[in-house]
Amino acid sequence: MSSDEQQAGSPEVSVRFPSDVDGYPNIHESVLYFLLASQTKDANSFIDARGDLNIQEAERESKRSGNSEVDGMGQRIFMRWSVALHGFVCAPGGEDERLRESIVAAIIGKSGGATALVAGALVSAFGISPILAALVAALLIKVIVAPAGQELCGTWSAFNKKSSPTS
View 1 (spheres, one colour):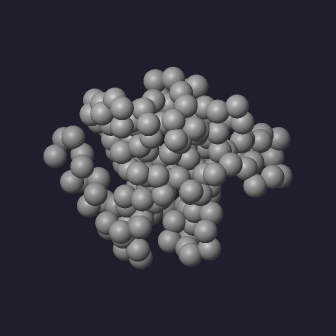
View 2: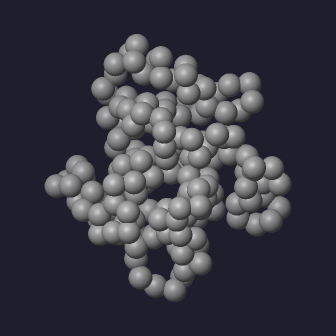
């Protein structure tokens, strides 16, 4: 299996992730939100010939449009995934414990590959598309994990409460 492919679900299912998925947390947050909203509206938005996201084109379009409505949509989509992932990762219980442990280890680990591993878990656990999973994983690493360090679940819960549209 190549570095840009990961198994999701059963061994027969192969899912292709963007080849540079672990670099996604280095993309500006507003561009990630823009891409998340764009991909939700049209799964072919900003896809290059290799099937990867064309980050440079998305950055140009994000700056050109200055569309806060699209950014807001991306933020709302991410918040829904953030709340769902928090419940999955931080909820006690034995069901899916190994997947939960893998996600936490990838998120707080120093070995690299966290974005790809979290994206793979999203595809496996929730059936989300690989590109959307990569964007959600990158935002998760960028806005929650990087600032939180070892206090992952408490910080994540506080972020969800602060950012929830109902609070």
